[in-house]
Amino acid sequence: MTTHDYHQLAQQAQTCPEQYWAQATSLISWQRDADSVLDDSNKPFYQWFKGGVLNTCFNAVDRHVLDGYGDEIAIIYDSPVTDTKQQISYLELQHQVSKLAGAMAALGGRKGDRVVIYMPMIPNQYLYWLHLRVLNLTEWCNISPY
Image: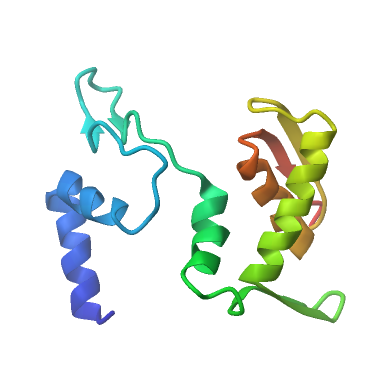
């Protein structure tokens, strides 16, 4: 994307936000399309993408595997604090997230349950966050001690 393209998109987002976001939504996968891009029937309480349903984990991981990018790197972790470096592919990420989601479901995790994640900013934190999205669990708090 050129600087010119960026400025054109930014201008469109400012002047025609509904059109801009309608185009942007075509770049992600929806489980159910929104009834409208913007519902302004109860101003000033606007609702974007009312009625639309999507799964964040599917958009962040699964769709890349389905599109043939499973071997591409999804997460690059490089910690100067612990001198640890790690790379995780989309396929590996999908497998690990699936295992975590299965374990949480086996423990009785259901849609709407609240879960607290307390761990440092390491790749596993993203795995836990993504598995919550698979099961539609609510992340109540994500605390990183550093």
